[in-house]
Length: 323
Image (cartoon, rainbow, N blue to C red):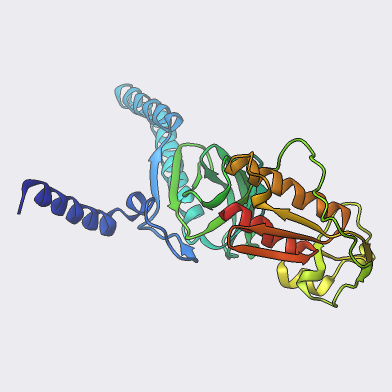
């Protein structure tokens, strides 16, 4: 066995040992299935800078009280020390038993923030001052006994395509800021970022023929006949049953007269590079949906449509994101 192979084998054994002994530090790389529950083996507690200054002050107070035989000062030092130790226990118990059960990623285009909703299980214990952090994005959590914890973060995006949810840091300095308790969560969740749409609204390509005028009827509670709720939509158009199933407000598509079919062909844009073609096709998909016109998306080896509606739009944007 070569020296490099022996060194690699030793490193793997060290990782296996650390995975058993220090899971809160080593699992920040390994993905974990939901639910993820925090226990004493995953929670770490360290004093903050304020806590170190407070400990130094207690040390000086104890030395002065012992030097001058000042019993009231010594009693005060002992009480403050007990409170600080109790605050460490409270910080630990604030994280202990927290269980991440749901991670739901919304939809967005490249360059826009990606909404990410975290759902934690309800607990009989009161949770105060919890903070969830992903990179530079942070949210504050709190819940009464029996209430679930929820947090919504907006993650920055740069490129289209699959986006693995980064590791999540859950921490607190509750109650006095003397100690910081934290742990890492790394769920097996992947979001999809749609392509960035072209900034200029280039006119839609004409198909060269006039399609037969028809009427689009919403098919009951079918998801393909629904779209996400907008602020200006009337309440009577909300599909309450479908909204309950999909955990977000959905609106029935109204009847629309459809005139011309649009053909959005990837190969019809030879003068543009790959990303420019995708950006223009994304813009055309959004424009066709705004006009409530049927359209067909032609990609290399793939064909979508002719169709219309939120489900068709999502299929097209997904294909463009993965192209």
